[in-house]
Image 1 (cartoon, rainbow, N blue to C red):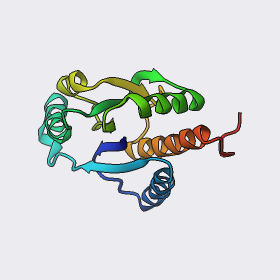
Image 2: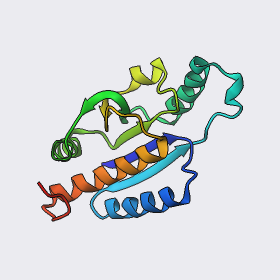
Image 3: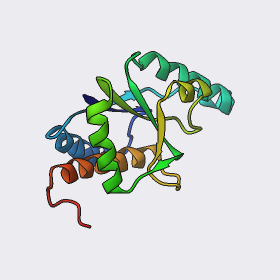
Length: 157
């Protein structure tokens, strides 16, 4: 199974990019992991929130493959502790399709069509973070989950 983090818009801050890349490398030691970026919608000031979500949603839907297992990262989703997320990843490694795709939406969230296509929604926190921070937090938690599953001393409980 390949695990993918798909997001709208690139990471602008080089410090975030450097740390995220370090976690991406670490994760690949355990599982096939890649990060994919869908470019931001241009000239968003002329679009309503609904129209922007619709356009971003169309781009996401075109990117998905029919067999993908889609997990939206959204503050209204199911919350897990790090240990629970490790268990979640272990179960998905046995049951998910070829690609387990975690998705970070645009600034206004996801369109209804993307929500309908998704299989489930997970929350990293009830708090709101920048998309750059979500990429970093997700990458770190995925790495943490892999070390937990391999009984390595990264996570302390």
